[in-house]
Image (cartoon, rainbow, N blue to C red; front, side, top):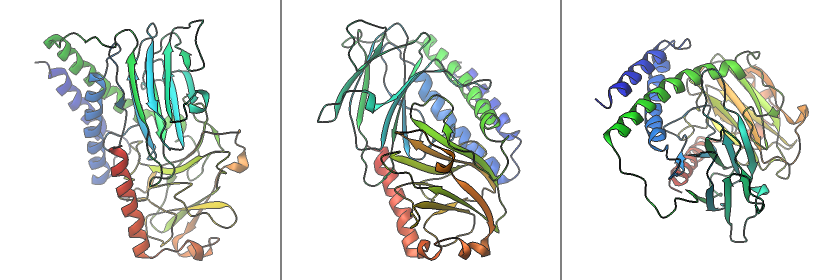
Amino acid sequence: MATESFARAIADAEEIIRAAPHVRTEQDLAEGLDYLAGSVKACLHMAWAYQRDFPYFASSTGPYSKLGLDNPDTLYFHAYIRDDAEYVVTGRRGTTSDLSFQVLNGDYSPAQSPDSLTAFDDRDIEIAADGSYEVTFGPARPDAGPNHFTLGQGSAMLLVREVFSDWTGERPGEIRIHRADTLGSSPPPASEERMAKRFDVAGKMLVSRIKTFLAFPEWHYLKLPVNTMTEPRPTPGGLATQYSSAGHYDLADDQVMVVTVPAAARSDAPYQGFQLGSLWYISLDYINHQTSLTGDQARVDPDGKIRLIVSERDPGMANWIERTGHDRGFMQIRWQRLARELKPDDGPTVEVVAFDDLPNVPFYDRQRVSPQEWSARIAARQDAVARRMLG
């Protein structure tokens, strides 16, 4: 049977999910099985998108196929490539806060991350007045213009990230890819052997994906002191103009974490965002709950700082970050499209206080929102994500 190895891989992945060390409650397991379902979907998608001669951009992760502490503010796309061919990427720049490109020499594994061979944002390419652009990736050539990027040895994947800061006001762009010497021709017809091989690849990818992103937090998070965040630092993985601050939390229901961070000037960082993630190393539900905030979405205090209120109980405050039942998890701040290096005082400070002591937080009264205002904030998130995913 063509699907036999894939069926075994699903069962193996479920065993890994059930044996994960952080699974303590029924909610933990249910979320793990939901994560598994999204991973099954994603791995089938990725295996069938392995078309290096007739490539197309596939959605790498999204609300229902999460991995790698996915950023709620980002549309992720990838295409498989080879280092001895030339590829043409055409598109139209949207109004999002950041558009970046990255070439990797492989995929993530439980032992290591792939090397980043090329990484840049759209400030490094020429874009026409109407927002249209054409970029080529391929072997070095003497006549190359500013929009040609040489593929390093082992280049295997092109990643594109489109990042929203204002979910309601910014609009996505358009993007396409083709191999220069195959445009106008057709791939060979499918065969049973090829389909069986793709099911086998998808199964191996699935097990590796689950193992990798259970191990990944050990590399970057869990060795840090709990309920703290790091100073801003270049994000691991080679993104060109991104810094991040990371941490993990462990809070009781009567405790609140107050994360205070300067609101970045748009001239320094047009994108600044904070999010929570579960111990499955994926984002929490950011559609129906406020589990993340960007600089545009957050309410900035008069002293120029954003105070994020991480809490299980509703504090009635605009910058409440909902834990949604997760007493443990990950947290991250990202700054993107940076115009300068960030310093320690650009980063966050963290304080854990009792829920009943929240009125002592600076500018507490200014942060208050009514239940009706909160409902409107959630409705705006639901609408914005629905429109973004159809964009």
